[in-house]
Structures are given as structure tokens and as C-alpha cells.
Image 1: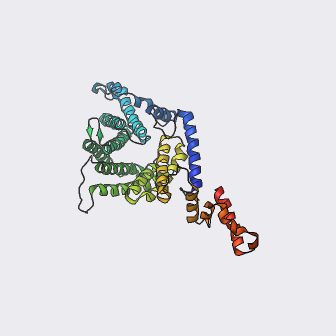
Image 2: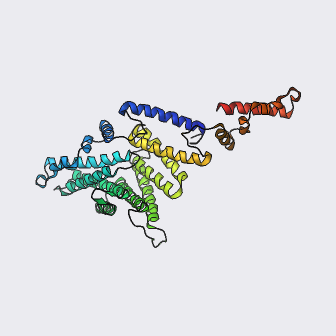
Image 3: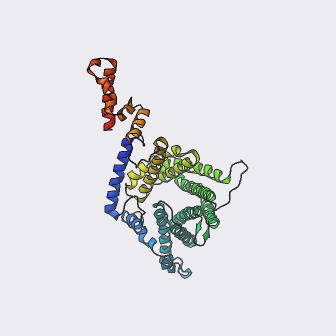
Length: 379
């Protein structure tokens, strides 16, 4: 806050903090925060922290559970449980994939298919009570998110990028038809957020060559329009969630994350940095330093700081800084005058200190420069 992300002391504090988090995480999971976490680690962590029931079910193959979904058992307790387990797994596998530096096609294919299965179960249960409708809406939410992500990845399993995109669009359209005058703002925010994710994922899929691009009537490409529309949707969802939950909530932080991503994409890293810093602080406060999503936010933030630092000094924040880099930084930021003098050898300056020149301006300046260098070289 006071010295900025690329100040040498801030970098040192970040290295110390990261090292302590690595140590804490290794004691809990036997793994470093910079390493890829396994599905078992994530499931165990989330289940222990009561974020998901039946988290371990997500580790089983789909065919292990599919017997519960046989048509003859519709409306039975087993069939309803199959829907609930599928919904848990759709959410778990999404968060599990998000905890890695890169999403896994296999995980997202399973996550999308679990969400589709859950939506099918809750759509077929009759009569529809409030609980069933809520579960159906949640299933559509994860169906749209997971298929949109699968589209961004270029598809997976039996799903092409185009087919995954169509499945996500269909889920969003069904969710729209469920909206009424009594739908609360925070539910509207969820739908806006999903639409934003879908637009962002389509844009990313176009950029990767998985989907075709085109020039729109506005003269912009479809990809650019999707990104601009997505940012607007995330900003509106953020406002709704802030009104409903406040800024420091796990719902609101999802919008903060995506606003940071889109600001960086559209307006450069500096525009996204403040949002990413905000995400990291909220996740540390609400989820703890070793939570998979906090780790991901920290990796993203560190990467952006590295990029910012390399543009200023040509050096990564994780590297040892030379005296020349420190002096240049401190002098540019007006923290020290004559910072570069600290790089010169003592004998270069010693002539200024000859007894005959005592009380002269040069002699007094030598004292001032020596004082500056004493502080500079310490820091």
C-alpha cells in the first residue's frame, strides 16, 4: 500500500510471505503452493471445510454412479440423490480445475456432463417444489459455466468447441425463461455473471482458433465485442452482489476476478492490477492463504507484478536485485538524492574529505552523500 508492489522491500516481504505459505501448505497437504494440486487434495480440503457434501464422489468415474439414474427410478430417493450428487460434482470439478494453473479438459468434460445430468434430473421431477426449482436453477448455472469453459478449451470428450458453446447457450436461455418479477437481484447477478463467462469463453475460443471470428456491423470483430459485453455484464453483476452481500463476499469476489481478467485483456495489465490485488486480499481474508483459489489469485498477482517489474527494471520480482537496480529505483522515486553515488568505490569520493577542505561546501556535501549511502546500502 505505501511503497508499491515493485519496491525492493515489498518484493522481499512477498518472498517471505510466499515461503511461509508454502511451509504451512506443505504441513497440511505435503505440497507446495506453487505445485499442481491433485484432485484428492482439493476434494479432501473442500470436504473438510464443509464447502461441499460428498466431495469425494467427484473422484469416482461417472459409470459408478449412473445406475442411480435409470429411468425406472425417477422421483425415488435414489434418483433425487443422484441429481444432488451430480450437482455437487459439477461444482466440485469446476473448482478443482480452477485451482490449477491451467484447466484440464478431462475435468471440465466431466464437470459439464455432471451439470447436464443434474439439470435433467431436476427438470424431470414432478411435482416441482421450491427446493427442486432452486436445484434446477443451480444445475443450469453450472451447466452454462462448465460448458462455456469447455468451449474455451476447444472441447473435450464427445464435445466439440461449437457443441459445448451451444450447450452453454441453451442453459442460459432456459435460465432466462425462469426469471420473473419476483426474482431477487442477487439471482439476476448470477445470470449476468454466467452470460459474462460465456461471452469471455467464446472470445477466448475464437482467439485460439476453435471458433470462427467475423467482423460485426460496428466494424469491430466478434471477439472484441464479446469481451466488451462481458466486462459490462461482470461490472453489473458486481454492483448487484455488492448491494446484496457487500464487496467482501465469495459471490462478489467472482465478479472481481473476472473484471480483473477483462480489464487486463482490454486495457492492459495496469488496469487489471488493482482488481487482482483486491481479489487476493478478499480471498485471503475469507478463504485463507492456503485455499486453492487464494493460491491461484496469488500466482496471477505475482505474475502481473513480475511483468510490471520487468518493464521497469528488466528483472523478475523473484530474482535478486543488484545495487544498480535498487539505486535506480530509489533515485527515480525521489527516496534518495545521489543514490547512484553509493555504487562508486569509497576512494573515488575520499578526495572530498581531505582536511584542507573542512567546512567547505564540498566537504559538507561529502558528509551528506556518505549519510545517503549509509542508508541506501543498508536498504
